[in-house]
Length: 133
Image 1 (cartoon, rainbow, N blue to C red):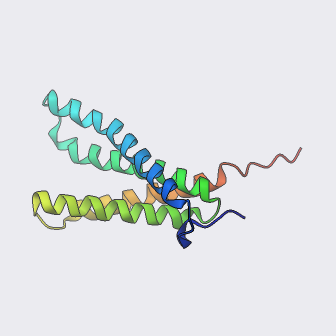
Image 2: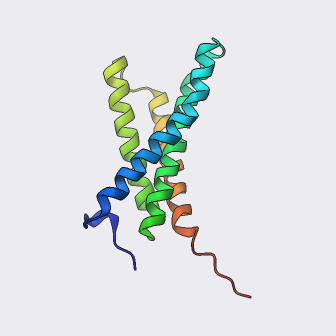
Image 3: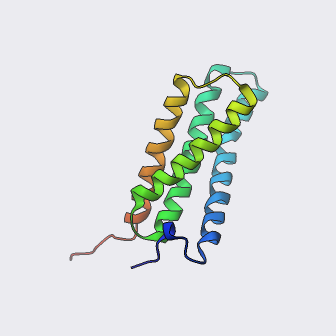
């Protein structure tokens, strides 16, 4: 049985930093599409969607990595990653926009949580492919 990420044992800070860097890399790579749309002034109505999808793909990758290293409770690891990403992004958007919470915020929460929980579950199950024959 592997060590638990949630108990705070030593050596886990490095995994969390690596997951944070992985999230940032995937987030930046997918945000490139939103930047291209902004530069060419095409489809401003889709910019919120691309921002949400880029955050969701980054949360998926971070949850996949962390739960793969942990080896158990992928849904819990994914939910923790999704909750942290949602809180950080919501706080940043409230500081910049001050527009309050809208239906788009609920949509972003659902998308982030689903993608990170699915990433956590898949991260745990990727190594458990049993060969029966």
